Length: 134
Ligand SMILES: O=c1ccn([C@H]2C[C@H](O)[C@@H](CO)O2)c(=O)[nH]1
Image (cartoon, rainbow, N blue to C red):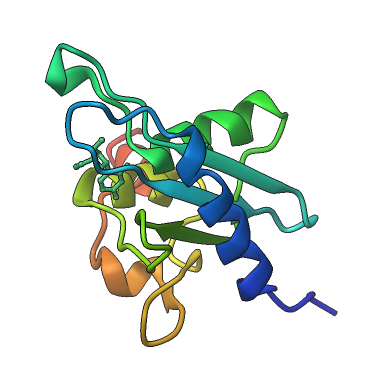
């Protein structure tokens, strides 16, 4: 049986990352938490830079933590803003998350979790690279 996603716990983890965010330029801290199929929880926060375009989103930091810890795939992700409100991943982050969860990845949403297929329809993915290979 596949375990239920504990959304409240995942949201709390995302909120707990707000205090770690490094966002002196935008003053918009973001926290993110995800869970793997095996139940491992990974977290991330945004890390900005004086060279603005080099800033890293919380979701990208989360994916780096996922892979650093030896995993590849996520099952569910929750992202929040400084108020603790659910925040929808930016477009670039949706693509980054697609690589590590695919169409079925569950993303927290104010109206209830959505699949990444809903949030990034007709995504460019690894299959597209395979398609041109002989
Ligand atoms: O999904 C998002 C959207 C924004 N940010 C960060 C980037 C920047 O540091 C700050 C303001 O855009 O919020 C994230 O971490 N994730």
